[in-house]
Image 1 (cartoon, rainbow, N blue to C red):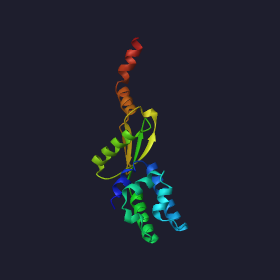
Image 2 (image 1 turned 120 degrees about the horizontal axis):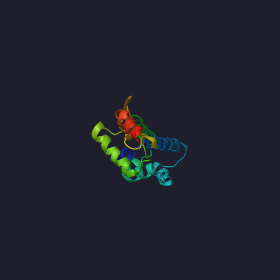
Image 3 (image 1 turned 45 degrees about the horizontal axis):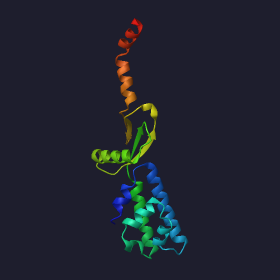
Image 4 (image 1 turned 30 degrees about the horizontal axis):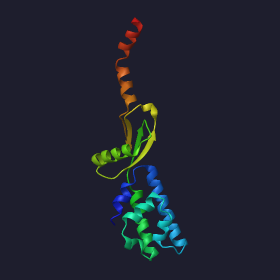
Length: 165
């Protein structure tokens, strides 16, 4: 399906993943509750970013399918692909904007060779840098850690300078 890449590339954070799964669940539930076609349901919900992607990118033939069990199967496949995306815990000092999320996604593609979802936590106390948790491995690249390391290493020198004053 040629819309897969655009659909999955729109998923960057744990929140995006949750919203996509909620949208697909709603789509699946409503598909069988009404006589509405998939195309009509998506058009009624086109304010949803995932509906927009499906309407724009997925083959029109797939949207016009009247066989609801085929559509349900495709929705289930989409949900399963989303659910197994690996997650990286990321603590940063600021709320990320789209530009930062794109940079993080490019960094992850280079380092992990697969699509990942970021579970982002904002903690201004780390000052800058990031704390990364992946598969139980914790790496602290925060600026606050570096500052503490420097202060600890130079503590006696700093104390001596303060006492001279």
